[in-house]
Amino acid sequence: MKITTFNPEIISNNADPIVKLFEELGFEQRHRKTDVDGKDITMIRMTDPNGFHVDVINDPHATQDTTLIRMNVDYYPEAYEILTDYDFRNAKYNEDAVFTQKAKQSRMISPSGFQIDLIHHIKGFFESL
View 1: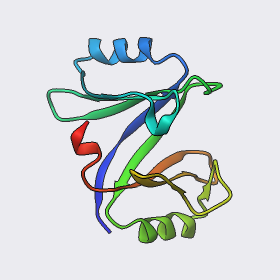
View 2: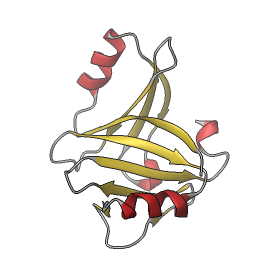
View 3: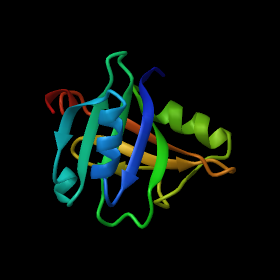
């Protein structure tokens, strides 16, 4: 298994001030995807001059800001097994993963509470953003 992306991800129902903060810190919006999976969700990928990334997700249904680690992998089953071996559980769903046309994804939560957004992307979708 190879980790292809590893960066912070912030989910908020009011992303504009968060985006503005990171712009003041030197980040620029690299991609903006609206109506993600047909929902009123906007994903904003930001990058700084050193190549660091932060993803800001505006979800009007979020009840509070949540920060987690986005971890894209090239082989989902192995990553999922490693996390579950360390007693992570799927925080949002009672099944292995959420499948969309674009990705296989699980929000995994550790026993102490930190979260990893485990994602395996279908090639081509996110490169086109």
